[in-house]
Image 1 (cartoon, helix red, strand yellow):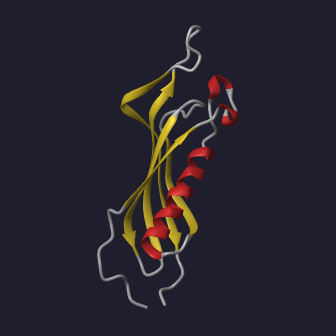
Image 2 (cartoon, one colour; image 1 turned 90 degrees about the vertical axis):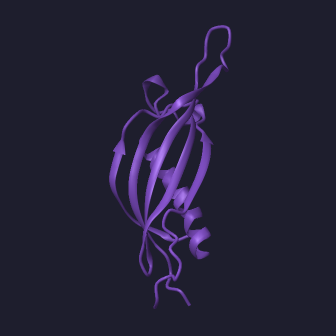
Image 3 (tube, one colour; image 1 turned 135 degrees about the vertical axis):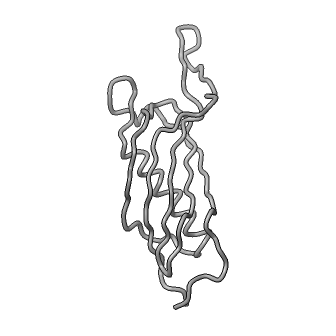
Length: 134
């Protein structure tokens, strides 16, 4: 099996997701850390489809960092960036950024704000494997 002939490192997939209040598990409308990991799985799947025409399978996470809370009412931007490519393995860097946050008040329960700059909530590196090329 040969490795790809073009350098695809740096390829990025981005998703945006609103965090519904039904996902809050803790006081202060906090969402558990596994929520971010699930989102990483979604962007990794799309990146594998884009690169290899297959969903791939997650093999491992490394260096997972929970840097700031994710709350119900947040608007998240989730990215996967290809950093290394082997014959079957794809190493990706992941990040969850909070780009918007609910800011309800008594007079405006649905109020929200765009965050400038966004808050880095979760980062990780992960390895995904894909089937051998035909």
